[in-house]
Image (tube, rainbow, N blue to C red; front, side, top):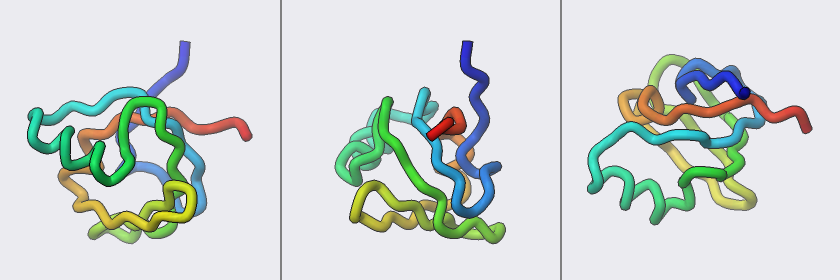
Length: 78
């Protein structure tokens, strides 16, 4: 079984897979519109205590810390 942790806890350059999103329906729809859903692979580009900057393929996404704390991910082995 994979252990999951909040996205907000991962360091820069980490590659992670989204396993669970704990938020209201409205926020989940917004995240899906940004390309973030269960099974998405994200790279952490910036995590310095404020907003996070993520890469999803060639797309760059900025997320607030409160949302990032409700996205649970597992570290990628690749």
